[in-house]
Image 1 (cartoon, one colour):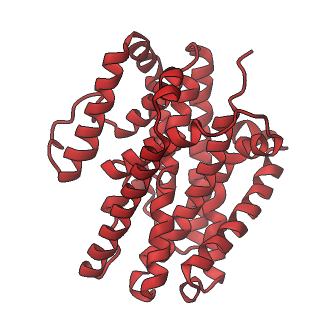
Image 2 (cartoon, rainbow, N blue to C red):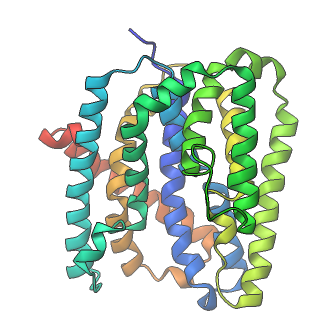
Length: 329
């Protein structure tokens, strides 16, 4: 039996909470013209720091799946379950958005894009699962030098050049075709080179890198948003080199400074994280409709709304986990 990795459990819970923070902060940030400067800055800080969450999810998946033997039957079952889950949750959000949120939705458009932006992760991870046998074969053959080269090229072509719209016409397969594949593979590399990283990591340098990346994003986004009189989002994308560097540095810092110790509460929350990710959007929609959040400073409003959304969603998912649909959550 493979020993459970409690460090990944905790990182999964942290990511779950941060994803909710992003979506709350987005409500504030999109209300740029209706917020005072302090509230916008607060929302921007919350939004920026929490952007490491989605890269964390990809890295956790890579660390989990690529570090063990590929099982064809399990992967096939995994793909089928995720596709069923995606179809069902898309229908639920479609009904919710059309009849509660009163959105004009074109059913045909659902064939080419997610019903909700938060569901894009499902499309991406299903694609990775489909390609998993090929990814696994490639990773198993790669040596240390190839691993280093992959990380360097991934950061250059995805984070730096793509950020300046250079080389976007003919993307380099594996390296820049799907930027989130890089997070997935690097998650495995961090586990693979555990001893080497443990011996050579520099906590001060990691914290400086994380802090500087966040600081540049917040300051730049704030000033550009004020110039455009509209919330600027480009630096908050997961393929932005600053988010890449901050995510990798944060993952390494946390993973190597967390004790691999069993915690029943964290393990329980970790098991609920996928379900929370799927349905928290509905709870958030309702709460943001009844709370005059624009009149509440984000430094206060975001933590309060986060507690409400997380608490209610966890209760609902915990109940659903006791039913037949638990295997899809």
